[in-house]
Image 1: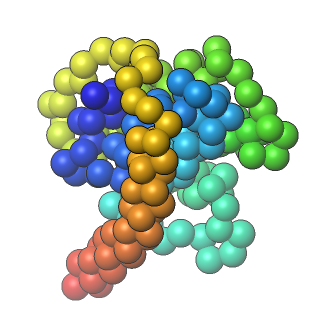
Image 2 (image 1 turned 45 degrees about the vertical axis):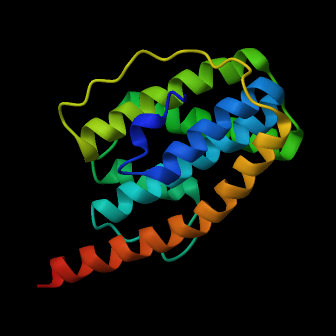
Length: 175
């Protein structure tokens, strides 16, 4: 069971990324940071698509997509701070090999908070999350390899979903 299972029905990609980040936390905080950063980036792309906001044509970076959401008044300060922490730590992990079990624990809980906010804002206003529970070792490394493969497949699906949302949103805005 994952702290991110509540996303499964509406946003299975986010649920998978959160679950994989939890599993990586148990064996590799560096990989956990990268997965959490991916979760933050996917969530931002969903927000843009669901709100009918086109991604920047030039310099379409995660940081600029976040700025676009802030310019449109869609990010409370605490949510912006979480996205910033996930993005910066992912960059440190990817470019400097950064690792920290303590920070991974903190960022997992913050990512859970982020996803609860996302569910309450874009999914179900009345959603009540269960408290975050620190993951414990329950699966073998072979199972993790299978999950990594499934996540790679779902990453491709994410791009298709976002494109479909963007097309649907632009059609309804144009009408």
